Image (tube, rainbow, N blue to C red; front, side):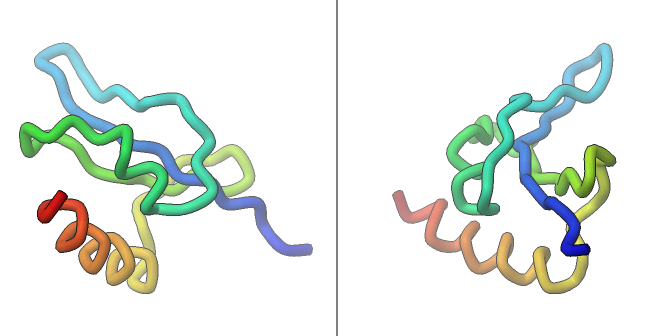
Length: 71
């Protein structure tokens, strides 16, 4: 069975960690919810469990970050 993976933008506040709560299909889509103040990042949600991006996803995030910063 193929795991269901979605992505969400997350950011920190003084009282904890927050997420956009959206179920983005791609990392690029999740990045549209990022707050452009340097406190945002993207996490994966795999079968309902939140996790850090794996190596392949991190490479995709970094590549997209370059495109994102030029917008």
